[in-house]
Length: 584
Image 1: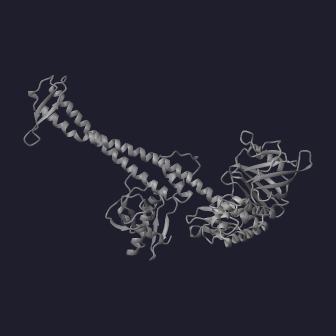
Image 2: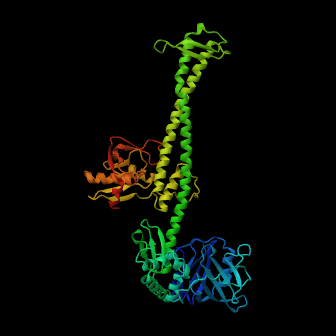
Image 3: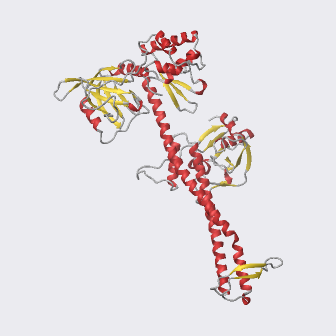
């Protein structure tokens, strides 16, 4: 996924075609590791992103709006002072190094023309943006590197700019096919061919080397050891093709995307190595492809972080509730013998005439049981027989009240735990940031999250449910989360529509829209499959799904979102995986 030197060469050509002669209009620093420079020509305006972020270092045209801080950082103010109004005269790349030099014709404080160079180094966590003067002296850098951080290459104001240490590799721009083949043959014979290319060629990313090996092996994995004469010839032949593509910067931007829509990798050549496990898309331009790739990847990364945040919150509350229920059930078990306390009180009262103060225990016949067996009853010698009886009655009433309260609290905690399980299920099925925002808004409404928004900010509105069409033309609506479930079941659906939900399993409310028609068996089964597919039982077989008319579904007063009761229902058993064929 790294932006390699060959891809950067194509970016360089794209930038040169539009920017040479353009003047710097504005300079912004949206965050600690990125710069945004606006250029203007007589014909158009352009924005170029310079990113030194470790996991997404790059430089290219961008159309993504970035929010700027109210107070610009020091480097941003320096660049504005030095570069604003400067004219871009050249973009240089030493061989296939992962860096670009942007040369500017600028005017200094004395009104003289000077050449300033802004260097974008794309090197993972060592990526940097460095401004140098016409003598090669560093004016400043996004990331200053002192002797404590590196003993090989210092990046500090006043020092001479030096290129990163060279790699002992062949440059594809000048190497011959024979040189590449001989270098491959000299490698350890058990090395994979793709890693062989990576170790001998400069400026190529792993995906390009894997694609070369894929072409040489016709889809089979090869090692240097297994290469025969024909494959060695193919290794040189396909390298020569690649060399010409890089020299002429004639490649095209391609991106591999997983079936789930997650960006996997990109290259300046068509990608075949993933086969059917990825979809390969061609971008409009190299810059547009990088915009799309990192926008989608960052979006999914943000979703992952927000998901983890919510997951921790829900898991913490669920674990706390489970411990609470376990503890309360233990207390409830202790209340199970409360009747023996009442019996003891009754027996003491019935035999009061036989007892005296000071006794520690007594055996009395239990007339509640057949044969009146003797019961051993402990007494408090400091109390009278009447006071001992009252003590047992008091303990009985206390245990009875505790049992009632504990039963009520266990029931409430169980319902809350069921609710949290439904939110966890919705979180597991969330696909967009809007889905996460709705779940977050729901948790804020229920008091699990603090409200951080301002008074003017409106809460996230409930979005539309998912819509499907059965094979015989009926519409099926499926809620994405509890807020949508409530809206769908209690407001959107009509009384004669059919409501589906997995039996005793967290999942979405699913509604088969009848529009006055009698639903077919096919529509009923497919709606039930959708209900099972959008539940925690989506990977199971023979999932029980309850169904009834909407008129039989109601929401108890004070119930949490998504929680309903229903009557007059029947149950279908379906396999969720078949729902994938139903039209969305």
